[in-house]
Image: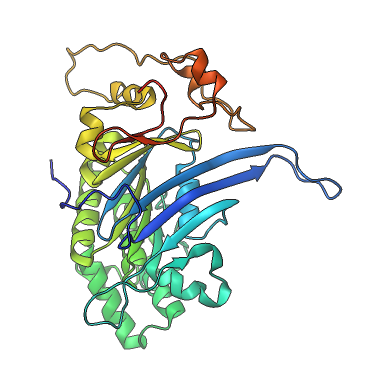
Length: 350
């Protein structure tokens, strides 16, 4: 298994952090009315905090509906947060020393500055079949960000699209430029989606389960490509996935999310070797083992996923936790606390 490039652990906010998220919260009203304010909300993301260093990849792991994609959309301003702060410190483009620019509060970015923000922060979507306009050619799809950003003239854009197609493994590029999405396989479409996200040279990319809709033969190639491009271009990823094996391959650190909250975060190998939260242990016990003779116990959790509509103030995992006590129910959801170097967990019983 390929090991991600070494990066220092960044679990506390530092001056050199590329992205610093503090208390990020997003709530969706259950119903709207012209004559009264909504009284119930879906707590999609609730008090999430983390930092991401330049060149680092953070895996956001959890079951469907836990709020992973919502976090990603908040970071690239496809959604606006209900509360919290997202601060970016993008590298300067014109400085010869490669230094970082001033920190930018994403909540303060308005339409006039949004184009500059989009040049630094991009997103790769989960579905390669739905993320492209079927009427546009591959050249039009990849060149659109260049046109929006006003980068280069027509000849320059053709050269840049040809270059990025070669980098993502679609060769010879001349045979792909004027094809349409329906003429490509799923893996080829996702390579086009990666090319579109990277063609303008962003510093930060949210990858929302980019391999989950691909067949097994395509997944390894896409993951290797994303790692290679990250190392070549110095990109930081927030890699959203429900697959711990993929997170181990792709990410320096893993954050485990449950019902809108991060419940554990650590260096990848540390978290997989020493899971402290009961939910993390349950996720690991559900990972398939490639041995038909191997038998394992079922994950020691009970019940179904708690509804995210106005959840109670105590621990979100209380109803399913095998270690839950009255203390867990009588107190607010536990805060993240450090257990060893860089290993954070939100659990009273850890």
